[in-house]
Length: 554
Image 1: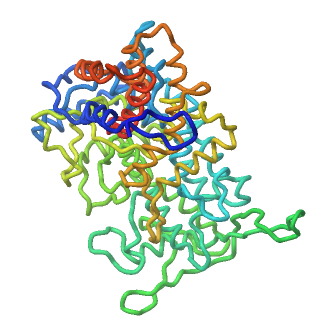
Image 2: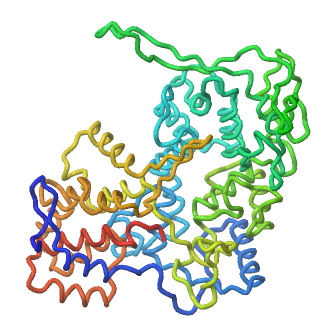
Image 3: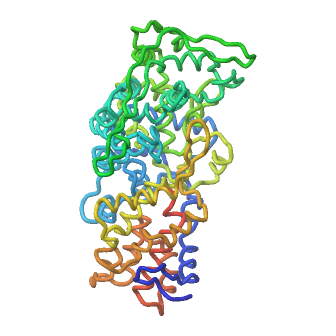
């Protein structure tokens, strides 16, 4: 019961009293109250005048709502947050040390932001984010995840204007790997569905509108009515999918080959059943503007033109709200895809200004992210103070963004952060293909599908027993505890230049991206007495990886 982690392939035995004692030491680190707030005059170093305007509006918003914002986050807290949000992983110990200026002059926060936005990991992370949003984590049959990723990778690498990305997705046709955008359509197209799922998904993802209720009847709290749903649906009725098969030369059996989206002849209205049992027709109309329903007209082209029209196009507002939600855990409007007069906005003036500026800057996604992460709100600590304790959107309150709200790590963030912290992949000695298989197997443990019309998935670490057990004793964590190969602990053990408590510093930097506090250091000194160094370091690493501080973005 009190033996240390085993170096064999068996499930490790944990010295529970020791490890959970360590977990108690580091628990609660991100929820305690901060000292008196100090935000006046703060700047990340950005010279963008719109960042200054955002900060001025935030200051006024907090004053109007009589809320005292939290203090500015310290460098370690902020660095971990921005790495997770922009690149999908925690920073390495070397990256933490560089930002703290231990070896050279420390870069400013805005310099770090620029570096991350220019990195390959930024492209990879956002490719994953939007691939998951577009086709889900569990790839539908006859959909090419590789093709979808290729499309988004190119879009984020070139920083293509968001309205052009949306246009390409809606107008896509052809082979699902030659034109990766096709996979967005294929993922929503099912037999005899009449593009209902595609209609609802497009409105939800790119317009910030939930239409699942108005498909069958008028909803009292939605600005869209049943007729408008079917008018929007009629824009997608000129496309169809073809699934191609081929002969497998080894087995002689017919197997799946590829799928494609093709145009089909369709003219006139669509027909739908009203709640009173009568049938009604609907023509391609969006925001009161109609498109010629003749067979020679490409209705989707007409739709993409209409999407960009108006004083404040919905695709701009939807993207601003979704990005704000990504970085803060809550959007200006919540749920993030339910924008409309029926749903109150937390900061309507700032929300509208950001949407307008986004359009003015040619739908520049990087610039939008740059504004958000350079803002004063994003740079606040997650620790509350007596003046903003009531700012708690998790309890149903309207978010005031006077502190950083805790966010559970997404499955991909947790996996990639474990690799960065522990070099567990080095201990596993797997080739690239096997590493991908392991990653997919890990992610499947976190995906919970809900059987509804939109294929909704829940994918954060939500504390289920199987997830907790996997994080405590799964293969990845067992690899992390390994003293073999090029693992983190093996390298730490062999570093004769470091004293035992200096090695403790390394474990903290690698996992929590900070040094232990004086309270933690004092407690660890006592706990480490009389225990072998190797076993103590293994137990410490295990405790930190399973702490609330590691599995949350704060």
